[in-house]
Length: 317
Image (tube, rainbow, N blue to C red; front, side):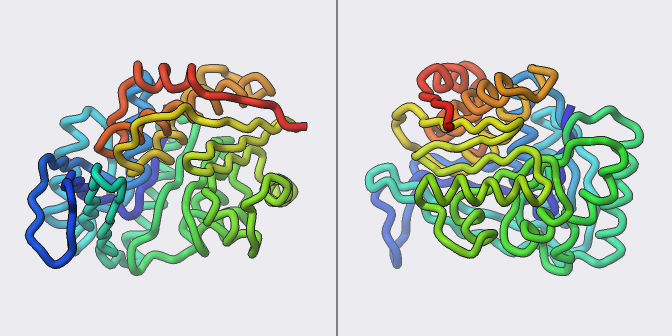
């Protein structure tokens, strides 16, 4: 079972608009409205694979009520802290004729220090009451929340023995890494912000991953979009290349990847050379399966496993 923290949850709206143009009226051929935010997407895919997830974070206003109702409809257990103001709306416009994706993401409600303390208390309470395998800390922080929130949660929950997984960017990522989470999952841009330079080449990427291990992170998974991913743990490094797909949307592909990686690791019971390899295979399949559909994390279990079978893996020296 996993506990996901999404401080900046959202109402996610995705529109499919053929021949999308600026400065004109565009009418979507399809639209999807779901509960969104990285941790919520992780919870959705983790449960699709057969696991159990609990989601927490901040919710506010009418939009927060929409998110709460959507989670209940999907049977995702939640325990969010209520705040003043409105939870954000995130809009993605997919144009299949050009392969473009345009996003408009609101900042989210301003969260008070009292609300932040309430969230930390909620996470600690849930961990004390339930046997969670992973604490997954995901996404951006809304206005008013300290950049150290994830680092604080990592430090305060470490004595419980729970494995913390960090997937964010900017200062929250840098501070979170300093708190030594069990796992981090940066994409290329996030990794480059950490090391202050390019990691486009494999040698540079391997060096950056090594630096994270030296900083105290046990498992590092660097995602590279359509190029695949590199996973490093237990003194083993694996590279995965996804199968070719008919691309539909990149929304939540990284979250789908994270969910499948953790699901497979939990299924394997122990972290070992073999479990890192199999987790990377399933995760890469999940990222590809999600990219083939419109909607955040609505790939099916069958599609994930089929894409995983087409994933190419190689062990790096």
